[in-house]
Length: 218
Image 1 (cartoon, rainbow, N blue to C red):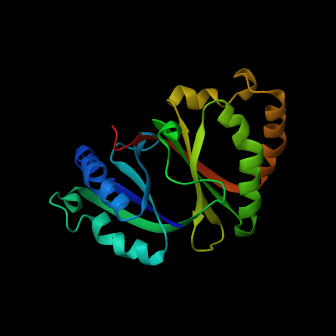
Image 2: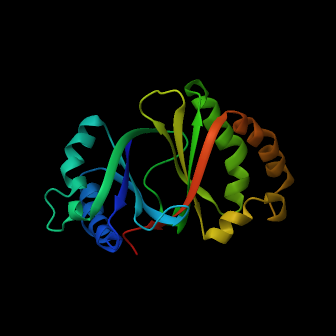
């Protein structure tokens, strides 16, 4: 599959309208068309309420192209274009580990750390392996769940990585910084301490913000 990351800055006070458009109209339409909407996020910490990220999965490039009018709201009775101040979209390729299909309700979290790393493009496979084998097991034990890890579809140097890791609230995110104090087994902590720094050595720079998640069931 390929994924679209759509980053939107809305006009002040319009997030509720845009949220209703996505969850009540766009999301069901995408599913009916065979696509996989992954998440709708807006800023909580280090990003504003009107800063939005929408991730959608498509079976191929043609399916992505065909879905563009619906995503843009061209045929909608609502007015999404009137709410948008800035908008940009790009194609992403997913890690072989996550996403592993549509997000199950039990894997959904209210808060996500949207972390961006920049690495050398040749380090993508190693970065994913160290994440999956070394970092995520200890974090998952504490209730965190990564719904997706992506790279830009274009090969650039440096290569931008997007990781979406879910938490129950900002305090939960903070508590996962100290796995040894959260009842994580010594085996998983040791693996994290051994492989986490190896992954860190691949990172050229990084940035993270906390975002609130919105699902159709809300």
